[in-house]
Every structure is written in structure tokens, then in C-alpha cells.
Length: 400
Image (cartoon, rainbow, N blue to C red):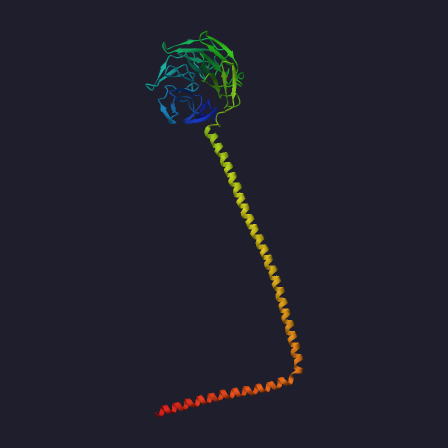
């Protein structure tokens, strides 16, 4: 949230699951606005957007998850108090950007119109309001000069305001709610921020309308200014606020039976169901990706191992081939050596045989010459005979 412009998101709390869930997004930024609920619909009224004070009203339907713009208030108001009393919504006091207001408007859900009712006796901004026993209570706030401890109530049947017993503490930015017939004033600050003596409060006090008295009860676990307060089940809840250093996303509950506040572990703005599921899916997706990554690494390892195995196998085969090549060369060299040995032996035998059988070879050589000559003579005779025969045949043919 921009501290100067306000927020746009609306969150809801599920008591059974102890989870905050983002419910919707408003049409524009708001801070110091008022809210009310009628027929399970949320009404957001007034406030300011960081530049100007607003009089606009919008309504959120959680079933359709849609916002509807409603008729605006007659007066621009921030720091106003809002509550429902016997059907209509009341917008109480506040600041219009120029002055502190004591005016009050009422919105009729039937006619969808705003009308003014009786003014408060005192102008009040950052005021706390609540309905109790058919009356509208306006508690504390600031009047422009100081924080107020006074309280007054409005009776819709007489259209009049009446003063009540004052609180034990001055409170601006006070949170107010009713529980078991009592009215509780929670937290706030005791002087304007411009006052160097201003303190943020953790004090809580309870008003009994039967006796018109206030009683201090157990304090909050921490100071909370501009705190939201509501009743849920049989407990009082204090939500968010400002501790002097930061805007709070924590919540605590008050048990009237034990007079104790209990800090809730779940925080606003970061732990909705959607975010939780998103984180869960993210973790599961991360595990899935991690598993896929491991599988991918295994596959890569196998491929790498296979390639390395192939390389090793290739190297081995290469070594075998080289070995076979060396063995082949050796065998070839051995055979060549054997052939050379045989040739040497043959030449030696030939040289030895020349002396022993020279005459025989010479006689055999003369006989071979004669045989060749006879063969050549026969060939020549056959050629001459064929030539003569052809000549005679041609002559006879010409004669005929």
C-alpha cells in the first residue's frame, strides 16, 4: 500500500482455516474510508485517494465478485465513521478537506438515496462508531484542536444526539465494536501527530450502557492507531493499524471471558489461498522440474557414457585393427621371407644342375629347334595351298 494514496485490494479472513484471502480490487485507491455490510455485500464509503477527499460509494458482491458504483454522499468525507443501524447505513463526521465535520448522512438501501439527519454536538474526525441496543454511538475522534474522550449516541426514533459518560482516555483513530451488550474502544492516539507529546495507545476500555460507565480491560499486545475492530464469533478482533513505525498486517483477538488478547499467526497481504496454492504448485512444479532435471541429467549421463563407451570401443577396435595390421605385416613379412628363401634355394639348385646336365639340355634344345621348324613349314604350306586354291577358283569363275 502507498501510505499517501491508500490501497485498492480487499481481503477477507476465514475463521475456520485461519487464512486471509484477497477478495477483490476496488475501482480506485482509498484510505481513511468507512465500510459496512448489508446482506453479505460490502459497502466502501468516502475516504481520500491521496489528492482529494471522496464522496463516492461502491458496493462489492462476493458472489459475483463485481463492484457496483452507488450514488455518492452529499459531503466529501475522510476519517469518517460508518455503521449500519436498523437497515440504513450512517456516515458520521470526518473531514471534508477543509474542516472537521459534525454532520451525519444516512443511506436508505430501499430508495438508494442519501439524506442528512441531526448533527452531532461536536465535530469529530477519525471517529469510532458502533450500533448498540437500537442506538448509534459516536466515540472519541479529533475536533481540530485535540483528541476527544467524549461520546454521544443518536436515537433514530427521536432524531437526536445525547451525551454519554466520557472514556478514561482521549482517543483519535479509535477502533470501536460491540460484544455481549458492551461497547469496546480499542487503541488509537491521544493527541494529533503534530503534538510532540502524542502517544499511540494499546489501551482498551469497555462501556456498559446500563450503568453508563467505562472500565479498563486487558491492553493490546502492541499499540495500534487507526485500527479496525469487529466482532467475529464470540471474540473481538483488532486488525492492522499503525504502531508509529509501520503499517501493521497482524491481528489479535480478545476473549471477554478470560480478558486476554491472543496474537494470530496469520498475517494479511501475503498469505491468501491463491498465494498459498501458488506456492504449493510452485514447490510441486519445482520438484517436478527437479525430477525432470535429474532424469535429464541421467539421460545426458547415459548418452555421455554411451558416447564415451563408443569412443572407448572405437579406440579398442582401433587398437585391435592396429594390432591386426601389425600381425598381418609380420605374417606378410614372414611369407615374403619364405618365398625369398625358396627362390634362393631354387637358384642354388639351378646353378648346381648346370654342371651335371648341361649336355642333356643342349641335345634337348636342338631337338626342340627341329620340331619348331617343322611346325613353321607346315603352316607355310597350308597358307600357300589356300592362296593357290583361291586364285584357281577366281579364274574358273571368270571363265564361266
